[in-house]
Length: 392
Image (tube, rainbow, N blue to C red; front, side, top):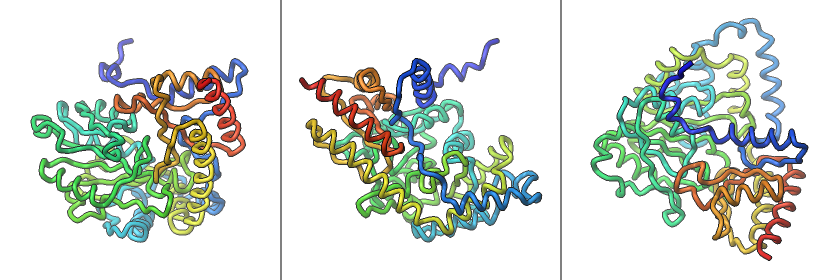
């Protein structure tokens, strides 16, 4: 059976490859520790689980979700209130907020709603691999914007050729950034909005790490910039701040035409999020911020364990202000894949090679600290011993 040609354009999904590698090693009896995937191990707050249990027992919630693909109005109102409280952003719950089955779905549906075959779509490199796949599924042409350390991992819009910009329809950004952990300033977002307006580019800002920040930093929403709602939609999720990755609940906010377009794709694709999950999400948004601060303390401690070990071996590495990832330069004589394979072969520790996030990710690996502390300590000790051998 011959499959659609478009599938041949899609590169293998990084995290599926990592899972396959882990499962194969475990089947061989190896004690594998994965630092490759950003999936919090701490439980979802108890009050959120209890609200799910309460709502799931109500037969009224056993039907198709209320307002189906848009999300319950009460959920959208809770999202709007959360955004006003957290970021000083005011949105209309009826027309400028949309419930999502996680922000990853929003990336895909944004492209289907905006991009025509042959349109260019700007994306950061290194960047979340799903952006490229979403662009290709929509028939668009991905155009990589280099994200380099010397530019604080901001793209340089002035370096994009004018002939590309004339054919550009959309752009993906993500701050706090996956995979680098870099954080944006409001000044950078203002520059982005001005740039997007100049070339009539629809901006999708992927913001799921908005609350995972350190050292007193507060992540600005791109929607807090004057005029942003003319060209921007922002995606967010409950996955990271409230340890709800498996619940698949997120939101899109911003330009009402973009929201309407994404909604139209959704109404022809899915039937929305189970009402009980939406009620549980409302509980999280309204009363679980204390859990975010507890998570930050945990991640900060775990980051220090890894950074102290690396710096003992001469890395001189300063962790980023955002996300629970560490974007680590490889030893000078090793590529990203070589260093990844070294850690796996010597330590049974899985990390993500930077090159999987784009050509400008070469020379880096990404480490996630979303594992139990005893397992992280074991991984750090194994890497410590392997690096000692490597430098002898």
